[in-house]
Image 1: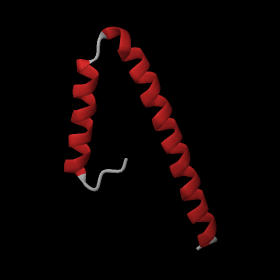
Image 2 (image 1 turned 120 degrees about the horizontal axis):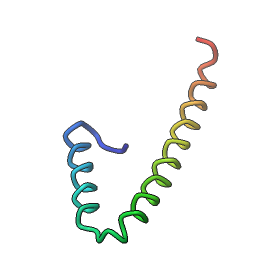
Image 3 (image 1 turned 30 degrees about the vertical axis):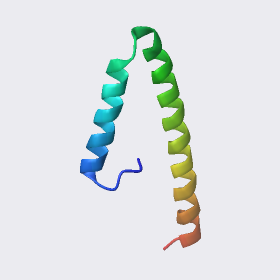
Length: 60
């Protein structure tokens, strides 16, 4: 989400995949849960920011 370009985004995604693959199976479910929580919070924040900007622009 915070990547400056596609190359950086790909590197971050690969880092997450490598981290996930290095985890014992017992920890993968917790990792997924934490990642989903983080993504949901970030999406909520982005939606709120978007609505604030959109509301500030009026009906243009």
